[in-house]
Length: 584
Image 1 (cartoon, rainbow, N blue to C red):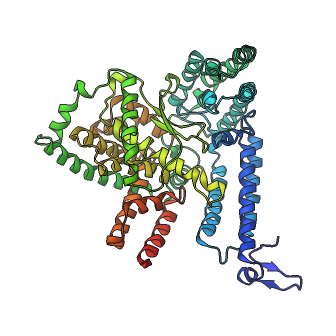
Image 2: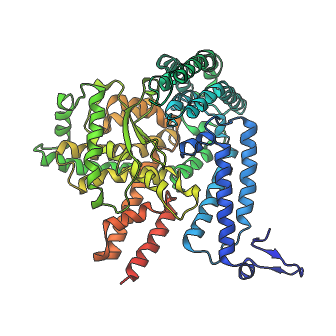
Image 3: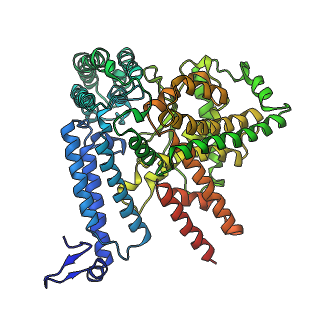
């Protein structure tokens, strides 16, 4: 290959990468790298048609992902070959962004290769997700605005049984390798499958056709979808539910900690790195959580006293059971989210010059996905599918509305919707940097974004401000309980008790979140660790730049490189600070 780091010239003389870089111009090597990036990005879309759809590329809308073990093995070999090609490109003399793209691609590939060796793909199902929930979202995956999109949708429905069979193949391999999710969580899955069948989201496309469709097309498509659901989709769901209920779940592990799996200590540390982009040991993370809880409770006490209460306990007692903060319907919760997002939107120019172009909607999480927490699902760059804030509303009478405003900023704007929408509209970056990212950056930004409401005049009511702090407290609690489960061996009851004593969240959230941390080791660590990094970088920039500090340009700098690992973001911010200081 022409761009090798060490090359043997035609004369037979070996030259170093630096010497070779003088032979091949920087522009030529950058062009080769960019072509490789784009070729591999396009290949990734071919390999994952559902990802392509999520990115607004509809060429493969008639296909579902191939999740067979054989395909995953081939993809892993492909990653190795891609990494070798990247390693063969000398980056000597590359500008910052091109060098950063190279480093990010290499880092991502190495992480994927390491994760493949851990075989987490052999545990593809739990109460948080799997094909039984992801496939139920197919009607929302594309803008069903043409007959072709409907026909593609029908073609995907026809492949649902194949996806379930391939998933079962992976689950059986995991059982043989002693890689099993927790039993009591698996026992929830058949009920979720039954819930999907009862709700039948697959017929949604037949309930509202575009006005341009002929009556003949409407009838034909309705008949085909209905037949496909009854004869192929539902039988596949029932077969999958029966397999989990009658064969698989009984072999689930009974110990909650990931460390009970083969090579468990390493597995948890690898999960921490994958989710947080740091190598912090669990004990350190646990202590950070305890320290943050103490700091946040001090701020809460100040809020309580401003509200006229002698201490935090009495303020909290005044909120318990207060009908003012108990929703009377699930629609009230959704309205709270919509109101908060709407009031934040005109305030964004005070905080940013980069603004999102894509719309955002608010919807309830369907009953069959009640185990899910409130979350965001990215829209498409063309705006045809808006970003979606999916809100937990089940058992609404046992919830409260105190944190609704903060969570709306987290999931909508200036949180997930803003960051991910801006990322998709960036220019001058390779395609792979416009999508996705690590949890520490994405979730850290969203948690950081919650406090921005206060900076533009919101959270004026003490209870609302307490809600903001409760939301942050909740993320600090996560540092303690996640490491408690997976490093210290805490029981489920210990986790529930700790969360109740924190007063950070309501009872339905305590129950679902406890199970979430058991199922997703280390994911919950990313929020607080990421937020702390954004706060640290902001304080550093303010101190270093003094009167040159502008919150809008700082936020733009945080967003206009896409989702970066925390150490990379740290170094990039230092370079930005130096450049700002040097500017007249």
